[in-house]
Image (cartoon, rainbow over the protein chains, first blue to last red):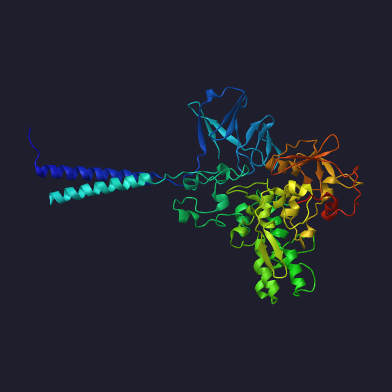
Amino acid sequence: MSEISRRDFLKLARDGFLYLSGALALGGLLRFLDYDPNPAPTTEFDLGPASNFPLNSRTLLSNPPAVLLHTENGFSALSLICAHLGCGVEKDAQGFACPCHGSRFDANGTVTNGPAEKPLQSLRVEVTNEGNLKLFTA
Amino acid sequence: MKKTLALASGLLLLTLVFAGWLNSRESKPVKLIPTLSGQPEYCITCHADVPEISASHPVATFGCVSCHGGERLALNADLAHSTMRGGANPSDLSVVEASCGGSNCHSGSEADDRHHIQRVMTSVQSTYVGAIANIRYTFGAQTDLIAHYGINAITDDQTKTGITSLLAFDPVSETNPSIQKFGENCLTCHINATPREGETYDRQTGCAACHSTEQHTLTTAIPYTQCNACHNRGNYDLRTMTFTERTDHPTQRIDDYYQPIAQFTQCEYTLDCVDCHTRSEVMGDGDLHASQKDIQYVQCKTCHGTLTELPLTKTLTNPNDIAYRMSFLNPVVDLKPGDTIIVTENGEPLWNTRVLSDGTYEMIGKATSQYFTFKPVMGSSCTQSGEDQSSAYCHECHAVER
């Protein structure tokens, strides 16, 4: 077995340290460049296969907060963000109620009690060529 | 030479590893995107332990920056806090419009009863108008008792009281030493003024002076102790224009309650101030008034009636009645359509009351959730004239011993 010379060992160590340092520095740089502290809000959501939402179903979604409706007219969705100040509304027997300031909406999102003045926002839903549902919040 | 290069590259690697280790020990930025602004903010990286301020202001909806200001993307504490509004209190009246205002929030329309900021700004709690006029009149600085000055200058373009504006009271420009002392010692009690230093004078300013009973809390369930932070800390000496701090440490409610009055009925020390005193009395009604007596009007008869008149009541039919809004914010009572509640002579609902089927009445403590049942004066053995209904008359028979 041949013994490594002192010169070769120092060269190997130097090269190894430099490669590792370069890799670490590059990793740090990529991490720094990849970090976006102020990303644009997500406005497009993939809900998965449309077949998961059968005809005449109403599905409460958590992200984004919305209710997805599948009727004979197709898919539609209603935002569950209160039109007053943006709190999440909760489903109740009459429709939806805002736990923050008491606004109430019927099942179609129409205001039945203020302070909200506008109805719950209708959201656009599209079926992709692959048969998936896409929900758009803007 | 090769040995030096190998050592240098080893040191470089060690330095990078150490820098990475240091970085890994830093707290990771925690992002929150409130639905109201849709803009990321990083305040909860350090403030995750701050409690939700109220059910009406959830952090997921409002975030921190919409109320507090500050640099939402900063992770350095000094930079993040550099542009905060009102320091730790964004409800201070100097910044309240930017923090709590907005047509959908607390500077909405009078018709919707959402002009809270306008009401507070013009309220006697902020202007101290009556005391200023009285002291200036007493010491010869003005020849009438007309309201000319408030703690700060303010205008009321849509006045219903005839007072369209107040000038800023400047004690320094006064020549009478008593008025100067009054300015020095007495103005600091009002919510529009910076409190004096010292534990006795410790209180918050702006909305928080009344609505923040604990750290980072906003509530309409305001206990009497919150009112006592201003109204029960000692006694005035009008001869020397000084304030003498109370030195006792009462352990019972009756001994702690509103010390400056000599007598109490059971209501006055059992209930909390906000159980009887209405929103317009305490927060103002949006108009400038000349003094406290022009805005404070609830009396014993408001709830108890007189020998010849029952208290005024109304049955709730309008789903947008403000009584529902009040009980929604402080759900000590579940008001339903058809419930009959007491109203004041100005039509303000005492929404924490109910007329019971047997003709008696019930009041639910806004801060205590306690139920109190009471009867009207009508049909009782009371002989008090309906014209003389100030509390002093009722105290004659109904005061409790202390």
